[in-house]
Length: 164
Image (cartoon, rainbow, N blue to C red; front, side, top):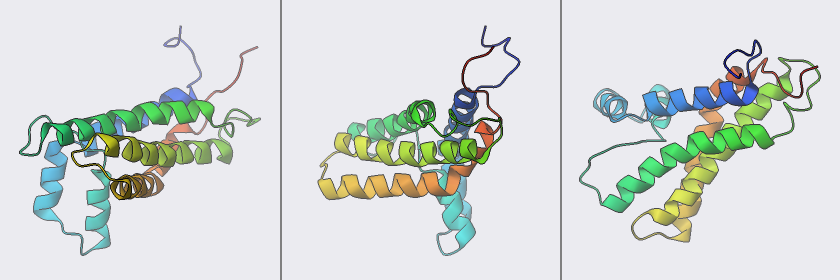
């Protein structure tokens, strides 16, 4: 039924955009490429490193707890984006498709998803502290602020509400 729907869903398109961002830019290959070619001394290098925030990996010299926490953070960014897109009322209350409220609801949902994913997964790391959890939430919010506009654009024009 959802595949034959002629309207795109704001929640579905925003979640797919978040999934693509996490799969592509959180991959070990992308992060290795960025670390080999760019430094944090430039704005472009900083942004390219920021794109790899929801990192996922299968093998590492880090502890199993830290690898699990990174993978869980990548999964939570996508899942929490879908949840916040569903819960944020801006795009649900918009009278017309494509309004700015949908854009800001999508962008805001990605900021919240990044912050909460960082906060929650900081609890699973080895030697967790409250300060580290706050720092991880701040990193996630920064990631969502600078990258979330992609999810906001993906939610523009999404169909919300009942069909008559």
